Image (tube, rainbow over all chains, first blue to last red; front, side, top):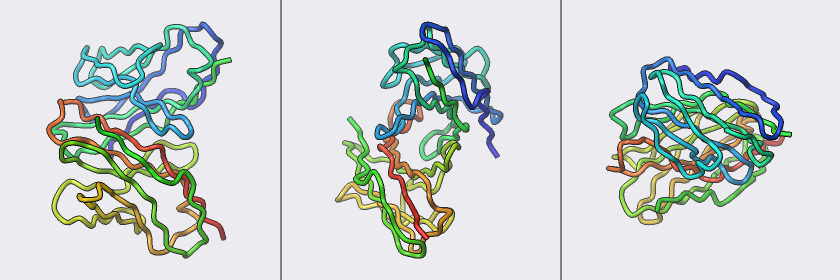
Length: 114
Length: 116
């Protein structure tokens, strides 16, 4: 089974802090994703990566950046955390060929910014 | 642009009753369709997917979904629900022939509340 591991289940940070959310997958998947989940809004794509050191913006990239130095690891960075970034963050990965390949999700990191 | 609409934010139902969770999508090209379930404090798990062929797709835990191209719908059904089916359900779409990203577009989610 594919395992996607997010390093923290819960995080509490202060406004203005730099925050790192880490994600590791163990199935040699090329594509990795960061989504944000908010009630009533579903999942919205922040950033994705289709190869090491390659990244593309999703639908809501403002206030975020990402890093992919190794194939198995995809980090989401909040450069200066704000209260409107309080949310559930979900990491996912998938393999190629894409087509009908599903995304495999981690258990999420619930971030609270105070 | 592609989009997904889940028509009900909450669906309350009694145990052993049938349920349908509705999903409509908008896309100018053919799509792959997915349903995911999220139990409390967990990530998303794949329930089922439609790639091609038969429009009735069977998934895990007794769920099934029917693809209707003319109505651009992919409704999820279960003939008899259990308390353990209480969760949030997400419909998602990926366009055929899209750029090599694999991203899914998700609906807003439907909370299924199964009552004893």
